[in-house]
Length: 272
Image 1 (cartoon, rainbow, N blue to C red):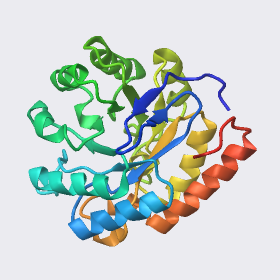
Image 2: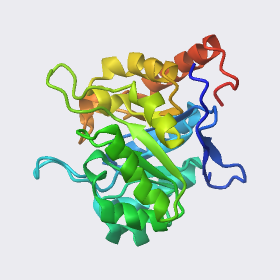
Image 3: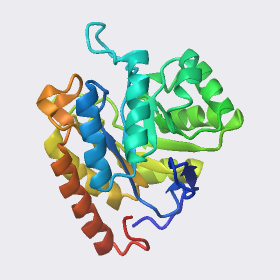
């Protein structure tokens, strides 16, 4: 394991005095559907993930999509679903923000703001998020050099928000067998460069559910501080990224595997 310890970002946990710590030797699992689609499906997923040991719940209600005809998320209609899932499970909620104008209405129900790959270069959005003290999960742009990624983080830091988590989610390649090229070498490099905690998204990084397990284990071995994993109760019904989503049962099996690998790697702390 990489002996380098990143800084620690503390995420408030609803109803708990103890925050979720990202970095400093912990290993967190953030999971959920790419997009919040149907209430019953989202609640089912959230409650299953809570029971199976996920540390935080991800789910987007605003989505930036390449094709204008693709599902763009529920928008404001999804706010109530995020709030209810948070209430039912007590899990911190991670959701994507695409427009600074959404921050006021998202703020009461969101614990971590996610900046997607397409918005890594949206410096005005980053400045606004920098004024917020809530944790920000900053994904790497799919054509971004590591220095550009670090500079994007600097916009948040200089605006006053030190609660920044970086997320490696793959960069654009030329071979169609995977959605992206998951650059795991970036994990120790960017963490040493910035001192910030780094998690890995093996779902977007590969676009294939059969590769999520091996890339998750590889990310752990590379020294990542956690994973961002797509999970949906019935992936075939998902309105976005169905091919890369695990079922809750598959997530539970992966979680157990990660625990065994962490033990084998002589991690100092067991997976909570």
